Image (cartoon, rainbow, N blue to C red; front, side, top):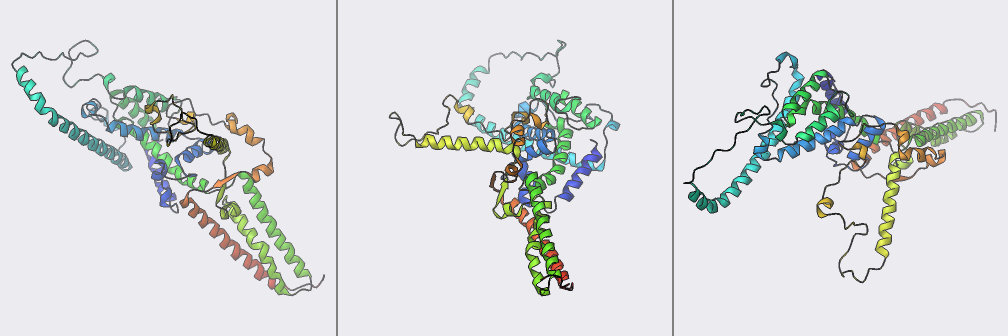
Length: 452
């Protein structure tokens, strides 16, 4: 992907964000601050099962975590990996395009450098305070040893065996060297398992920079491209989460809307052919209004009945996980109902599914929001063939009626609920206007007096 295409994607993303609540912004979704079905897990599922393009989010999450971990290093560790500067590396200036829209990349690099400098100052203050506390006890020992002759430290040797300069450091001692090499093989290199859609110049930048430094600036072009892809997909993801039905229920809702509209026309034709008063044709408003409303809402992938119940149907890949959680909750209730053992200490409660073999370090580790192994940072190539998924065969065996009345769960996201309210209100308004126009038009049609 070229720099011009990246900038164009960012501009389109900004334009398409109109109408999306601030609570469902890209930043909140990425930081996992939103409730389902707009959480980070749901965004990954959308990219994996719908867009078939999950590599950008996988790399993006790793890069954000890497910047945070790199900023927590000690100053002497950061000194081993300087920021990548192509001019100091004697790169031809013509090989790097200097478009005006590449200022965004420099702005991102400036923010990253600011974060790193803030963390460095914090570490420096902490180390200074620690040295200040121990300076009194060390000063007496240092005065005794000051008269002893000091031997110079051994000189660093380069890979060729010659004495290196003072500022020379072998690349193998740089922090996170192995991790950067794995990331390059996983996402950057040509033919990588999860290769990002980078331009030739951006790919060459990342490959060359990662050979010299492990600073986050080495992979900044890849991060910029991944962010542009994600921001362009974010509005589509929000519109997709607005749907509260599966495709089968969606078709059913549209069909019911069309059926109600046809029933209204049938009643209107009978009243026109009868000797009844023209004002009796107002009853056609009853099937027309909900019929047009249901059809428009179904066209927007919303079921009005489920919306008024504040529910949504489970996605096919969510059902297996939902059933597992239900089984775990039932097991916990059974364990809690069991009488306590005599050896249990009174007043202490134990989690029914707690594993005592897990150490405190492992149990305190934060849970990765990406529950699938294939969606982790490192892993095999993303296989978007849904036929291989465990849920696919069971969902395919369901009947049409089972899919129409599939299991539902409450909508937890309030901002998404407001977005759905807006869509339903628009459908109801259009339905009312359309039904009123048809009813008024029917009143002016003269009766035929053909039937009673």
